[in-house]
Amino acid sequence: MSSDDHRVQAPFGAREVTVATAEQIGPYRVFGCSDELGPRPTAGQFYMLASSERWGAGSDERPYLPRAISVLAAGDADLSFMIEAVGPGTERLEQLVEGDGLRLLGPLGNGFSAPADGARAILCGGGIGIAPLAMMQQQLLSAGREVTALLGFRDGAHAAGARLIAGAQVATDDGSVGHQGLVTELLLAELDRDSNAVIYSCGPPQMLDAVRAIGVARGAATQLALEAPMACGFGACYGCVVKAADGSYRRSCVDGPVISADELAPDWLEVGGVK
Amino acid sequence: MTVNLCGIELAHPVINGSGTFDVIAARRVFGAEVDEQFPFSAFVSKTITPQPRAGNPPPRLFETAAGLINSIGLPNRGLAGYLKDELPQLATLPVPLITNVMGSNADEVGQLFEALEGRGEIAAIELNVSCPNVKTGLDIGSDPGELSKLLAAVREKTTKPLIVKLTPNTANVALVAAAAEAAGADAVSLINTLRAFAADPARPGEAWLGGGTGGQSGPAIRAVALAQTVAVAAAVELPIVAMGGIASAANGRQFLDAGALVIAVGTESFRDPAAAGRIAAALS
Image (tube, rainbow over all chains, first blue to last red; front, side, top):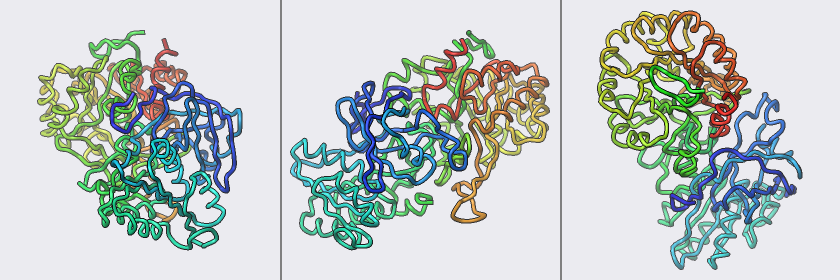
């Protein structure tokens, strides 16, 4: 099914599936659904999700567009996703319970690539961004690779999400769990120990940018999974662009969401990335 | 339910709105299924300009009630890049190709027409005189006299069917359509997005979109599009390609009943790339 190296192609068109499980993990909602028609995705890919019922007429009469959500885990015929309610779309997705209908399109985007032979993988992320890292950890462990996980959260409640990634070192802004401070402080310490490690990151824009800067400064291979508002997820709308190092705009949905740190413009955040 | 649009045979009356479906990207994402299940009876390219355009800085999208505001800024590889890199890939589509172009004056439009004239892969040209978020497209299509002058200068430079895409951001769209007809257009298409402003929730009075203002699309503009279709159908004999928030066969039927020969699906394809195929099947 694959045409690009780290892309599993999607069936053409959105399909209806049914929510099979739903669980609350701290402030996050994790739900699973069967997906017998779709292929098994690779870590870093995402799906466009919308509830089958009552999509719309929420706050501000939204949501209208489906939401781009990273896949958290995938079995042979099932998928799971992690949601944090931050707006009308994720608020509606968070309400889904077992038996509810879900409209999904995917898998979409370009996923993570494996580290070079012998290189250790460092997963460094935080908040809702831990979802693709959880799937990457499973993929790497299945392949017998060495993985270190470093996760940052704003507080102890959010740090509950760390249980999705086995053996993770945790940092919290308020120090209620793990290291008090930034996850990038843990990252620098790990790179001091092993400068050949490959970094995989997903998280809030400022965290991602800090990881980008560290990866570039240390010369470490760094793969960033970007988050951007997008209307379609498959390259049609040109709405999800980020500024690349060569000055061009790239679509997060088809040229990403995983992009190498050195391919991103150093000022990508200032150019509207976090507006 | 075949349709003849300016001599082009279409298998059904549903095409895409320019700039709402990128076949080349879709093939990367969906593989061969895109061509096997191609949802449109003709494919309209995104707008091609003489020189490459990077497009507007992000953010480029703002979701609204029943739609969205975009400020994409017509990114494209320019005429030379289109002919070299994209046209060979679009030429293998299973449906006729309509190339949408925009120039900031008659010289530029004439240059575009002349460059496409010898390309047999292109069945028709759609001229964008209406994109509200690019300064160059604004004035010509909103004024009947300006449009007449432009078309008079460029019409003879192409023998291909010429579809003029009208802007809704004008005082009287019927007068503009009549001007297009009198100046040699073979069809008109409408509506493009309605000029719209997205207020930044965190910065009162400031624009959310990197490009400043944008264009509203989606079901939010359907009733406006229908009104303009009715007005244009009463004013001209030309075939009409109608669009604006069409999300179902029932929506599409209203535009056909209002006088459109062909309908286009745009924003609904963002929600489901196969939507237009379902609409076409339900209309037949």
